[in-house]
Image (tube, rainbow, N blue to C red):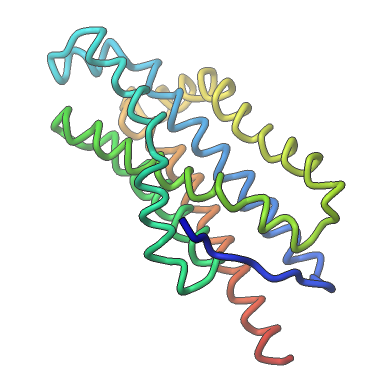
Length: 205
C-alpha cells in the first residue's frame, strides 16, 4: 500500500516541535485510558448489557485489530498529505473514544471501540515520519520512548485516576471512561493549531 510521505522541515519553530510532541503524547495517554479504564467497570457493564466475562473480554480484543481499517483511512486521506492523515487518526481516536461509553447496545459498543483503535493505528503508522521532520534520526528512539510513556501512563495510571473520576462524576462510569476520549480531543485541537501554524509559515514563505 502506498502511504503518504512527509517532507523534512529544516528550521521548525520550537512551538511547532512542542505541539507535535504534546499532541502525540496526549493521544497516546488517551488511548491508554480508553483501553484500560473500562476494565474497572466490567461488573457494571456486564450487568447493564447482560453479558458474561468472555463477552466482556471482547471489549479489549477489538482494540487489537484496527490495522486494516487504519490502512483504508490512510488511503482515503493520503491526497491531503500526512498531516491530515494524522489529524484524522487523532480525531477518530478521540471522537469514538469519547462516544463509546454512552452506546446502549453491546455489539455497537464493540464496533465503536474498534473504530477508536483504528485512529491509533494511523498515529502509530506515521508518528516516526512526523518526528523525523524535527529531530535527527538518532534522536527518534528517545522521542518515541517519551511518547510511549504516555501510552503506559494512560494504561496503568488510568486505573487509579478513573476511580477518582467515578467519585467526581457521582458514580457515573460512562463519564469516567469518556474523560480519556476528552484528553484525545485536546490533542486533536493542538494538532489543528499545529496545522494552522505550518500553513501560515508556508504562505509567508
